[in-house]
Image 1: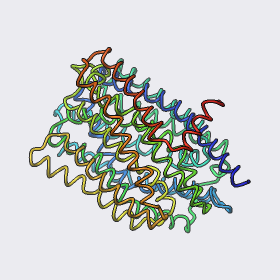
Image 2 (image 1 turned 120 degrees about the vertical axis):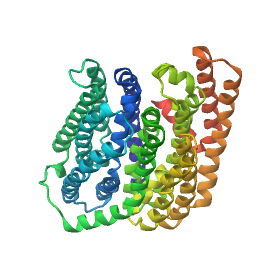
Image 3 (image 1 turned 180 degrees about the horizontal axis):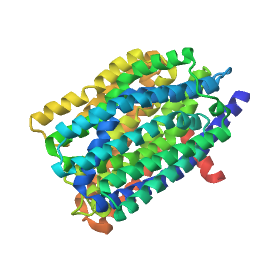
Image 4 (image 1 turned 30 degrees about the horizontal axis):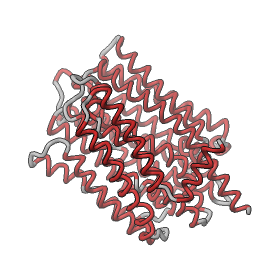
Amino acid sequence: MQEQAAISENSRRIARNTVLLYFRMFLLMAVGLFTSRVILQALGKSEIGIYSTIAGVVTMFSILTGSMSSAISRFITFEMGRKEADLGKVFSTAVAIQLILAGIIVILAEPAGLWYISNKMVLPPDRIYAAKWVLQFTIVSFVIQLLSVPYNADIIAHERMDAFAWISIFEAIGKLAVAFAIMVSPIDRLIFYASLLALVSLLTRFAYAVFCKRHFEETRTSVSMDKGIFKQMFSFAGWNFIGAGSGVLRDHGGNLLLNAFFGPIANAAWYFANQVNGAVQKFVTSFTTAINPQITKSYAAGDRDYMLRLIFRGSRLSIWLLLLVVYPIVFNAEFLTGLWLGASQAPENTVIFIRLVLIYIMIEAVSYTMVTAMLSTGDIRNYQLLVGGLQLLNLPLDYIFLKMGAPAEVIYYVACGVAVLCLAARLYMLRGMIGLPVGRFLKEVLLREILVAGLAMVVPFLLSRCIGGGWGGFLISLFATEIASCAIIWFIGCDHDERDILLHKILHR
């Protein structure tokens, strides 16, 4: 009875946190997309392309930090799932590590960024001065965000999604204020934009720190380094470096290649596709952020059955949520892009980039909960060698195809193809790592997701061929797609237990 009550309480907590995160997501998506439009009007396509490229150069250094960020999140959450937890040592060690990494990033990024701007970056000569200032402020923003990682991880591990949601909303509103502020900038608009973003990062970092120090005892300890925890984190991060680094190279390395082959306008198209990517990702990550701590804690507690149940259900629900968002955008991308950015303002390739990045998200979303379970084990060497090694194929394949004269969107085709290979590799590896029943996963999750996605595509595809554009065509497509998708998800996608849970929530809310 106690175990059943604990599971029920965990389910209620997941549901409550999901609601909070969805409130956050809707507001952030609206603010973020509107902010992008204002920035386009204030800066123009070329300036956005310059900023996107420089930000990509700095973000490339997350190859060094991304794996450690994942390690910190995993160790803090895992420690909370143990009966004899010592969060103070884990947290203080995490802060010490991030301070060291911040110093290393400044030392490396400064000369590397200046060299790239002066020797390799494609931009008008009169914008080199502004680009160098943007580099400085972007490094500052990156370092501040790096130092926020332990605090973010602690909030999520404690499942205080209310704080996570409100601070994120504060950050989004700050960025919106920045977008309007640059319209009346007293100095170069691009430099002013980068400097204000650094200020928003600093204020957000301060908000995270204040909340954590008021609510979580472990964050009040002095910064110190526990050698045992330090060694464990670096061992974990060392192998996770392959996966985290390959993801950075795939995303931001591809952006740098776009600059080399097509110039800053292609970077602007990538920037706006990435804005849509981030907005849509929030739909699924709002759910997985709520469920991920429970996956890690159930592994730490040795509750394998509950962990597998969360993995299966989390994968299915991630795809159902995405279907309701992705199909209306994919099949109405031209209309929505014109509405969002203005038909004459949107950079070339923006529409095709948006469509392809959404397809990529759908492929990757199948694995989100599996990746969380993998990281929970801590024994990730073989996984990263295989899956991370496959992801490393993205950048060389991008370069080969672009060198052969392929269009800019080839980077997304490559990413989708490699993502399918990585999904197969994850299933193979997790069978041994956590005892994942691959046959059951294929039957209950993957094949059902493919069937539902295929059937749900029929209505928007036919409507895109039969009705015209404009608001009338979009609204017909939107409502018909949502109704058809919901019916298919309900009758084919959801299992009996999931339908009972949804009915109970609807009838008893």
